[in-house]
Image 1: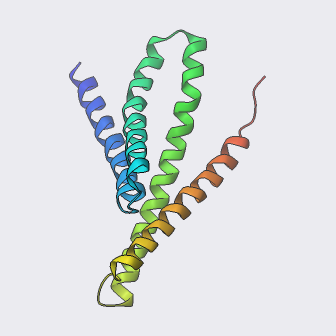
Image 2: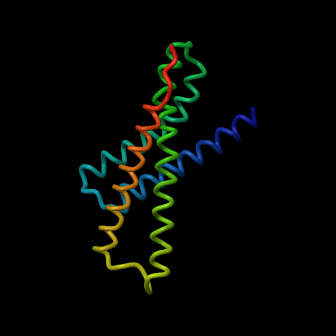
Image 3: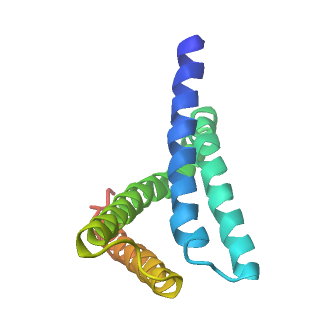
Length: 141
């Protein structure tokens, strides 16, 4: 039982950390206006909480219902890792650019524009690559 608790705690910490990173880069850094900020925050929290609960629930549900629940969960896990890597690469690139190009980060208006452009580009790029990956999955009969 202790192994299960430790494993589940590590999974919760990793998934929670990744979703916090999504929230920080896609919502907080882009200064989304207030009604949308609340909805985006609620969406990130809902997906972060539902992911581990769904994985546990899949083990307890009958076969057909479990497969129905598994498809969106595993698709989100794929998108999650793509988005994480894309946002992380963008963040590392901009940090290196600031270190090499000048004395520090640009003024707040340019920083906001850059955060919005990188977040939008990472999200759109992830959506395109993820959609191509999902459509390339061979269908079983």
